[in-house]
Image 1 (tube, rainbow, N blue to C red):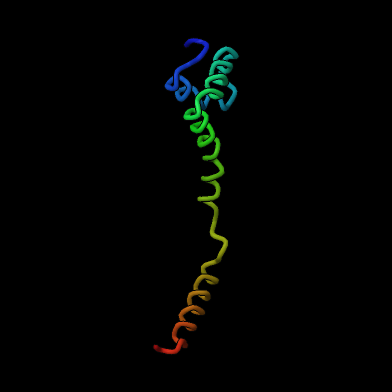
Image 2 (spheres, rainbow, N blue to C red):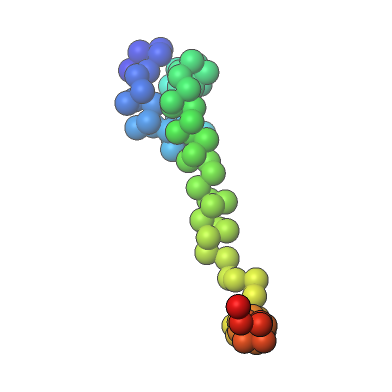
Length: 85
């Protein structure tokens, strides 16, 4: 790999770059590439966002099933009391 790696090289080693496990020369080359290439920088931002997105997606719901059933019953009750047009 040359001092300035290609997009393919950057994306191949991006996980190792983010973990800090690449040799210094490669890290510097990728760091420079990321400053010049918006696409690869966006790819890195997306990769870094994944753990937070997964955590939020897998979090238990804030409402309990009982609360959801009660809310549905309340809405159905309000709809049944609505005047018919």
